[in-house]
Image (tube, rainbow, N blue to C red; front, side, top):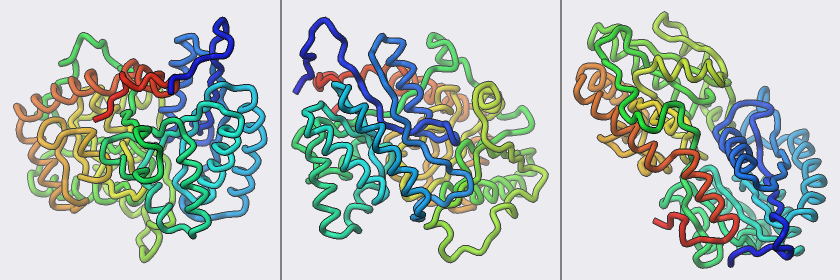
Length: 388
């Protein structure tokens, strides 16, 4: 169904119910802020209802009354904004309480006959749904069934909503970012790996299951194997996840006790771009249970930086193994070290992967492509949204 405004002379009012980077930098927050800025530049009448909660000092996946109350207080202003909107866009949660919040929002929006679009920026909804009680499953199923469109990041993530969403309503839209380099300079970032030191960049919040300890261990093994000057820089906020804490007694700070390891904390703007400009490889050996399509991989490819990651969730569809990336079966130290050595020691292979990464970004992950696809989803012109 294509949205048509009741008043043809008035632009439809779009409400974005989603988190930002107000309390910490996250991939979903960056995507939402790019979407808001892009839509406003394109002249859309857009309002934002921010669902951000403070991450620092909290544990992802652990229920706390204070977090529940903060999320509940977001409902009231969002509900009032739905009344004044024509189209409602909601980023879908993968936690039970967040999904209950979404159920309230979607149900109210559907009651008012608003065109409502849900967007899952991850891969954890299905497991949460299947582990929920039958009554909750019924409510979640009804909410998803009321959505005019459900957006997932990759074709394999369609399974998150199969049997729950309306037939033909699941759309595949990859993340996208603004290009840091001129779009005409596809080969602008080709780095010689012979230039010392060879720098790896871990550009993500430091969640244990994102693989930062394994990335450091692999870097140190690669140094031992080659005697080369190989360094790793870690940039992101340190965050705990409940599932990572089970059976783990290792202190994450112990990972940083080496001169070849640098931790710079959360970065943005020029500081982040400088790190990308200096990096030879983006490393993310993730096994994060709610992983979807890591934005840092797209940011790296935008700069022509090859990637070392894992065959996890939507990553194999984001970057092709052997072309733009080396994708490992698991976050295993020796496999990571071997991948690092293979890139650091083969200048021609590195140059080829760098070119491929930049070209893939321009083809599939630019901000313009991202905004075009989101517009077609929001307004119901599904023919031009990628369905593969």
